[in-house]
Image (cartoon, rainbow, N blue to C red; front, side, top):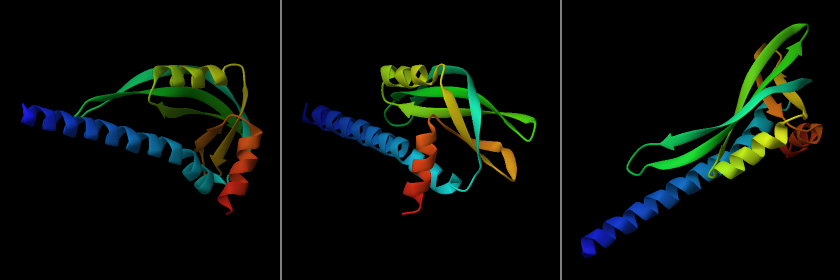
Length: 137
């Protein structure tokens, strides 16, 4: 019986640890994007489609997460490009709220001037300008 409780405690520790790591990575992604794309030009874009996808993580303990996908398009020097921005969430409601917040919104795209098909989606211009300020610290 004690072994069963030990195993349960270990499994719960793994679950909570994996959740904390996933949450930390999800929170770190915007900061990394801001740092590495701050010098990229900005254009307006359009979210063409958005959806929530279930994401299963496999390993010692299965854990389920959700990804909000925003499929967007933008134009650079008359050429059209598209991208898929995926944002991870622990709950389906959180992912759906993210998807819903992009519907009907004007968005901004930072693109790599050397490879315009490489891009990052920003919802508001204030996020784009804030990324410049926070990245320069």
